Length: 471
Ligand code: ARG
Image (cartoon, rainbow, N blue to C red):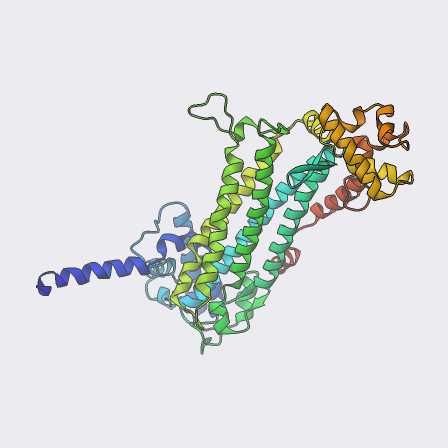
């Protein structure tokens, strides 16, 4: 019985095993990095006279041609190869014969893939940083334009105290600025080259690891070959940073969705970033903001997935590590897309300044300031708090604001009230007397804006740029 289908079953299983094991469907994403790494490796082998000058030149020339042909669509990366490393090597051998077989001298796929992923991640860090910088530029513009745009500030999603739109945008500026700092911290730690770690224990060839590291803009080689092939900390750190970026974007999206609702009408999302309903003609939905908020989950998933994959792996390389790619690639692409779209949405969004101001006026956001007014006139704070509480109740019944009350009405609650109360509890006074660093007054905001303007002039990744230009 077994014989009847056994042969066929084994064959079928082999095919499944092959597909299960193969990584070309996703590691083709870093074919450029794979070729770049191979070129640096071969240049070093040539310098160390492990390969002849001629061999070195022939391989590098052919690797360049393979890169060009793939980019021009003349050479397809097909799934007949197990992974991108086999694809490049097989094509090299096909084109230049035996010389091509020398490419892999003193190298293992373990240190090769560790290098490729690092090179790819490094590039993603730079690109993500550039996109965040564009977002910060838009936020800084809004901060500059809106130091007098009064709106309610919230706690518990209840109106609390008046702030300005400038101040509110400034809060997000700080978040995305920290995100950029996180990226540059990660970069500083990860920019070391694992190539030359071999399978796990280095090699017997006289490789010059400093040279290869330098050729690819790394600060230097990694210092332990077992760690070199099995370290994925840099990727975990990057996924954690990407998760934090998504968390920030998602909070911002949540606010925009609320502000864009018919109940709030603080903002109007541009038509280009809204969508309609197939049944309700009146609808203009904030789909982009909702999608960015929604995509946060898959980015967190990439982080949790890799943390889980890594937690039980003994030194050094194990095949589990192949799982570091698919979700990470998805997270990297998702975050870049989200930041870019979000920037466009905020840049084109219309702020309804009158509505914001009215909302601040009508929510007793100046109640704290009214109590402080009484304190300044000698009323103990606890008594002042009680008096203003009663006034708020009175206003709610009459559906008016504190500043709408006549002086005689106010004086029924406390004889201390005088004409200067109106000035003291106006929205402008409430905001502009909050002058400490980080507070919403125009003067405090202008100081912050000047600092952030200087910050945006700074070049990111300066040490890396210097390393590259020294080459
Ligand atoms: N596709 C593999 C990965 O992504 C490449 C390294 C293979 N190394 C090995 N010893 N099988 O991790």
